Image 1: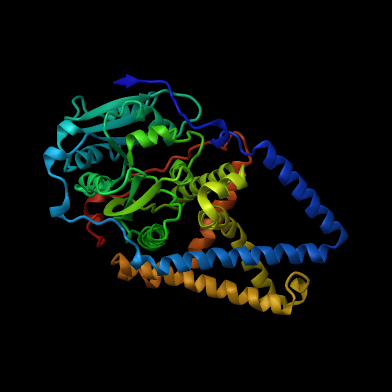
Image 2: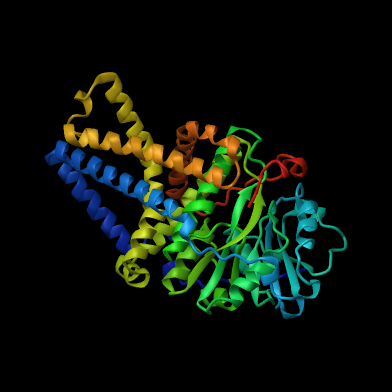
Length: 471
């Protein structure tokens, strides 16, 4: 076992260590003062501007997701059949990073799955990244690890995050390529070979390929059905649309494969960002490099317990907020590096998407108030034409997103989950709860970089893994 000090090459100006830059503090303060002054002078106009702006942003986000999801089938996702994979003697060294924390329940099954990867043992380096004070996981490790496996101890200290562990692991990486797998992952055995084929057939500026993520337990309960449908829409439709138009792709937290030298050149992961994957995807795009989607599936365990799901979702939303704030510290530079299309895509996919989750309860409450008390209480905020346009947009947007979830289910063979999507608004309401929880954590320095652990191994992966059809 080896131990190294944490290291990251991410510049301070691009790190989420600080919530806001000095410029952002000045801008936010000025905007708040201006909004307060307008509200005092003319409350009606201030309310109309706020609701009008929110409605336009809401509609833009929904339209963006619908349009990209609609064009998924015309994307050029990288696909490789058995005859197109490189032979064994041409395979380079490959490093697999596996961050672990309190994963004794799934550890032995994980080791079996990683050992089953179709890659030569002498060129496959699997690094188990274990916190040095994690006695639970260390105690569950076998006395003798399979060939090609190594344990790397992660020093205790702030922040205790997955990207910090990955940065330590990267210092030990010997492979030309590397990938991250989570503790509950069930990657396709040929995934490493497919990634090599993808890199070998692409220019050097294609530095990352993202495999698709699906859940092996969609039928556990209503929550897992919704979670599986969401992933089917995101990885089966939406990200394919981003890939088709070569827009920045916020990476998923696992099964993203990298050129190791390019990853090091980027400064690796930001240890203070709790969605380090999405942040890294945007940094790749800003460098002028690209991420491509690859047809290869990694199965994961969908959260079947509400508390566990809320903790995980709050962390994701908190990290998306961090990512948006970090990259918006210099909007002009971001526009120049991403280009106009990439800049707008980043706003709609990362920043404003979180905003709509926060706005949902507000719009729903206004709709309920209108149905109960008529237009009187909200007439100042929504004059007649604006009101009916906003209501129509909200209804159409929700129906179109429900349709997108249903289309994702059909694309992934989850036919029995289609009718569950009629209750998707209840799932989005839970997202809003998680979003407000995330914002509360974000503004508290003691919780800003806190990594809320997602508990795995809640159900038996054996028979559940055969419940779903994957492609």
